[in-house]
Length: 335
Image: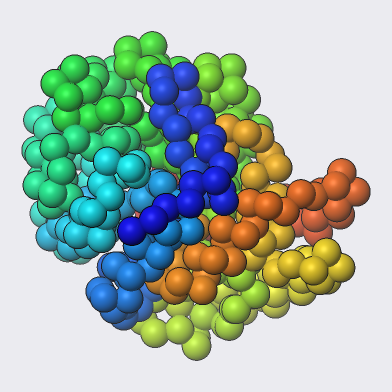
């Protein structure tokens, strides 16, 4: 299986040596949140992404709902080229009660170790490239979290430490104990919340940034429909940005973005990813998809260069992000 890394180029995340392709692949939708999926198609998509130059593959304990299905899928898909890629996974939820999935938190040191051992087993590997705390647990000092991951790094089970959805002060405190290589948070033309405090702190500390949902959970692909047209097991059926009122305003913004993209001869997907890449060389977005055609479209975005005039026009369409909150109140991260 051949990999053509030069298609995407290499970006550095943090100052501890983590290098990856300029665009990664998020795998959450291959097992949860976006309706039924096909395992064979998902594995084929991961392998196709590697062939296209993608070297970062993102998963999490949560994406398997405690069963390991997401990490097992990623592990099987990359087995033939495991040492050529970066596997990122996450801990931090209490998955004992299905009714509390995505809400109940647990970053106790003993739980971190338990999840890490499970992840190693599910992934079929003896090291995890990036281990993220999935959500900040207000009951556990971040210093204890950083220290535990630091021990796993010293033991050779983890290579780099990451945080997800953490605020600037939390990042500073963690970084003082164990250097953080990457922070992962939602960031796109639809969600700009990290720009005021988080991104400046990361650049001050020399930490890389990994935007998830860089395509607004699919809205910025241009293939969107109102919430009531999605099945109940698709998160977009309840997402505020797809609800009446918000949907129409967001769809109008996407149509305006399509016009900008059309003038440049690219898709709105590629415009959204190119905009993110233009925000800094320390940014590696991880769009999720289950289709090989989407992988190719996303990878091609890495060659798009936007002028200052085009960047201003894009910013003017969605200066403050999308209409509608990105999560219900019960799931909003604690920064």
